[in-house]
Image (cartoon, rainbow, N blue to C red; front, side, top):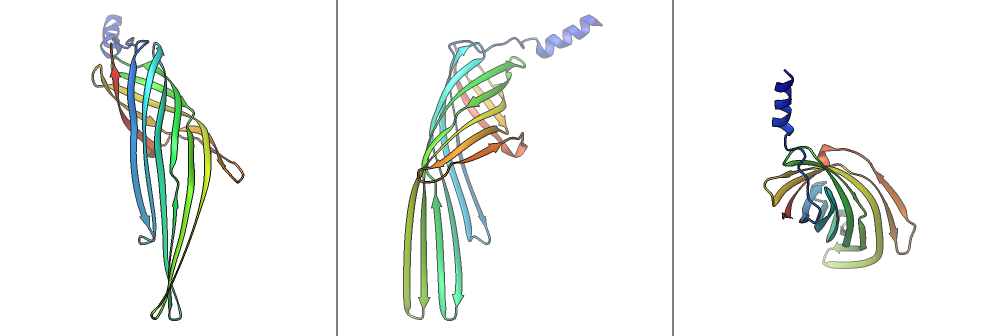
Length: 218
């Protein structure tokens, strides 16, 4: 019986001692876009981000790396009101473009010859600005009056995040990875304003992200 159990364990985890060798380099990244409309299209939110990453294994199953990318968000709120015989159409647009730098360290634990569990500690840094445009058009009969204002404020956002995940190797060069949730802290500091702190903790299946990684295997 012991021999049968041992044979089963070997069959399932017989190659579980597989390691990612020191000196291995990999390329990965993420690209995302989302769009949401509410209130019959009067409120529209768009988000886009791209963050390529490069990692290097400084020891067996231990990698350090850097991500450099760009992200932007856009929120458009429009409204139409009528006062007497005057129709007023307003549109408020808020944009938040940012340059992103994210150093990280990642530790792997071998589950099988192709499957790994990992934990990643990262320090995401965002250097961006908040652009706000307010436009209004008032129409009374044949009379049209337009008004437009805009403001711009720079900000810095620095945080610390911890993400758990799984990495499955399709072959020696390609793998598919998934992260589930995020534990972290961030500090948002506008150039002319007070800083705010945010804490995020949770393993949420709705926040699962997937990515593809290319490994320069030896």
